[in-house]
Image 1 (cartoon, helix red, strand yellow):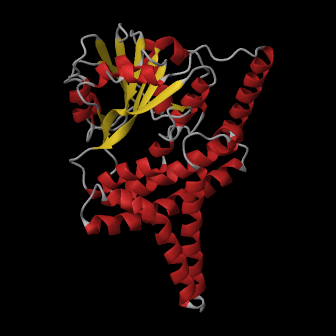
Image 2 (cartoon, rainbow, N blue to C red):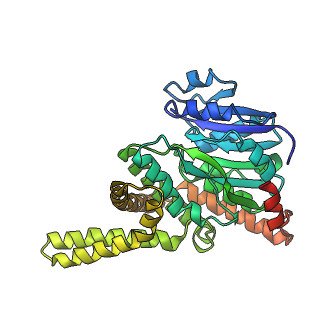
Image 3 (cartoon, helix red, strand yellow):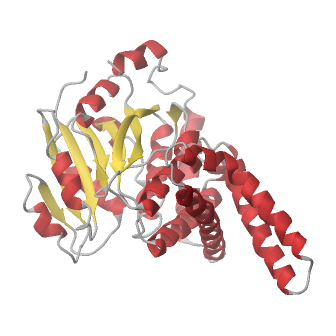
Length: 365
């Protein structure tokens, strides 16, 4: 178990609905040597007042700069030997930091997963299950991707990289954590484990859910265009075959609906709908084992289609944006050129050793 101060860094923007639960949990850890840092990203709600009720280091951005820059501001003033990140809509268990200390003895970077917050409504619980279905279940034990809502670093590892994420997505909370992971994975191994978890409070309103997945489709497409080798051909997080199948099935339903409206045989639509439903059966079975209400299953089937359509909108939004020669693509090109030049100068592998089964068992206690 590693020894030394842990700095817990939490960016927050208009987070009054979730921040109380988050800070109660973060400030009640069974660890004895840690600090909590909140970076208020120009909030206009009660975020500042809530932070004043807890023993935290509080930083306020006078204007919104986004989670990427906010996290780095927190890291810059942190005094800990270890940097741990979570989000204002996450609730860690009281043993979270103790678990992190064990895992950081095994690897220089360790990331975990999300669990559903049991008090959330049906949409919030579905969103957590769905996130596992299209992302968390595909992340290998040694990965190049993580969510900044549940990740920990040895301090020197976090700073041993380019801050490329600050140039992506403007102020949007999108896939900036994927950029962080990609830059770190160039030099350091990242260990992923589902045994390190936090509760995550997902969006509970349909409009927010749709907007979030439009952003997901947009950000993942932009990253794929900017880093095709790392995020498409060698992707180690989202399974592209899963995503493409989902998008194709949804587009078939939409196109056949148009044809039927124009006078085509309705069996065309029935066939497309059957293909869509068949594709969702494994996911529905996963959900049915966790949510026993048949109405929840029906809602899930509908929301799969809503999610896929939102992804598609985000995809086209990114393609249109890319046609304008955005600065993100220029930054990606500069970063690739720099990394290629460095690779040409050295052939030495990353310094961290491979993670063995015995070491993982030791971290699990």
